[in-house]
Image (cartoon, rainbow, N blue to C red; front, side, top):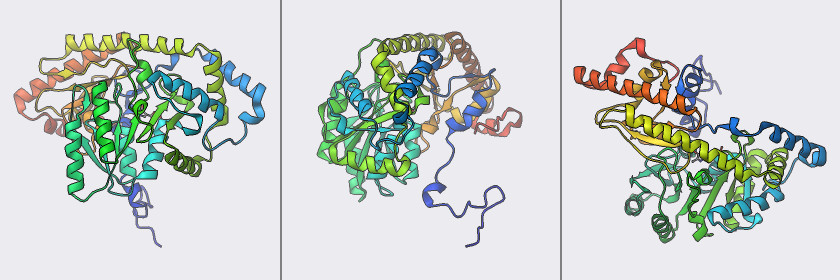
Length: 431
Ligand SMILES: Cc1ncc(COP(=O)(O)O)c(C=O)c1O
């Protein structure tokens, strides 16, 4: 069959429909710009891996090869290495999850676990309910599998159960198949919000009533600033919840190891789906993580991360108070990496981004965290990576940009139109 694409990509008309909707996220295009040293990036949620003891990690990998090289360098189990699965069952008790190594599936980060669950559950146009806003990486998965994403309204405790019940009823009325409630109940990405216990129970009850699977994505809960780790939804229900975790935020994302804790039947499907994607996760990395968990005071290391991130969160909150104009509001996260900012009425955070990058500060515009173009007035600021002084400087720069927007708006009206008309301010890599 003749290809009828364009010079940039001759295959463009040949892709499957799911590939056609795969487009680069705002985060991805931002990384190129924001990684320039002069830009203070409050954009990407990169853990501060410099705080790890690299020598110890290097020694761990060497030891694994020396002592167990023939296993470490070989193919392994599709479900994941049993020793690490055992350690994960201990680790998840910190969120009060009780499970068995048989019900743990190890994946290449929890991102892959999201992909596997959706692959196993969703036909095109099946409905996935998500928070408003939701994690951009999960939205990419839902889009790739051609799901219909419904954003459920929330408040200061995240997902609102009444709105969830209404959204489900509405979807059923429209003849759609509700399949998954995808939620990040603790230190949510991007809002930073946390559901309280009551809310978690209400959401679980609704899911059970309607036979909809909850996918509980929980990469951040060990990063609770006061050390109080919330009880997972999965702790109260082993049948209706797939619980996802990751070593990305507590050890290092470069390890690419996460997991799903799933009811028996689902677990089998996830393993088959994972085998078809990657045969098996890396034995070398799994054994190294297992060794690290067993032989290093890793929870002390997590505490170091927590304290460091708390200091950075405070730097962010204090400087926002100082530099952001009246009418700008933000969430106060009790853990994790993010605060969610709401700009004054009429603002367009996407249109403002080129001016911010011009002023050497980067953020992620809110629309990236919605499947339906909401979030125009919002942006996500990450405080995990820059040092506190850089955060203060970044917020000062951003405060200036917001103030300039206000002046522009007062003079000319709508800021978004101005931004797209002013060629000298554009940053082509960004939007
Ligand atoms: C909510 C959430 N889920 C999943 C992931 C994916 O993490 P990983 O694949 O590194 O485990 C992230 C990463 O930022 C996240 O914020």
